Length: 95
Image 1 (cartoon, one colour):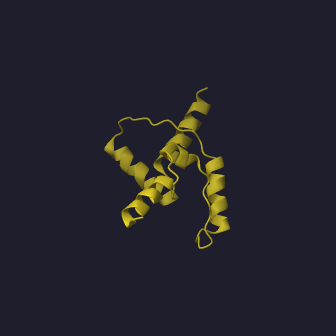
Image 2 (image 1 turned 60 degrees about the vertical axis):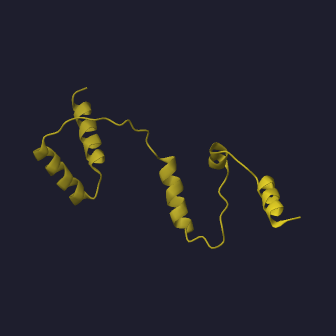
Image 3 (image 1 turned 135 degrees about the vertical axis):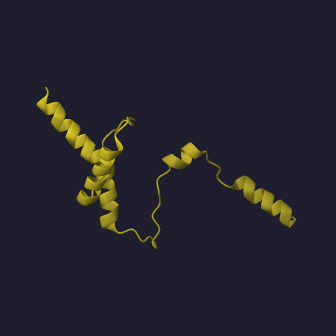
């Protein structure tokens, strides 16, 4: 058998899978993996407590956006978290 035939046969026998099958396939951990159990646990907890979100778009004055951005940096939070908290407080007051 020639080298070309060997390569063709090898490719034919390889397990072929679609992208959706690949996504559903469980990830096999390798021994040399650098992810610690603590980091792995954090990721699992974060995935379990993930909140479903809806993307919205609205205009905001540049002055207010700048203040909001600075506040987010000082609090080490995301802008959307500050906006969510403010909206929840506003809606509780005005129920």
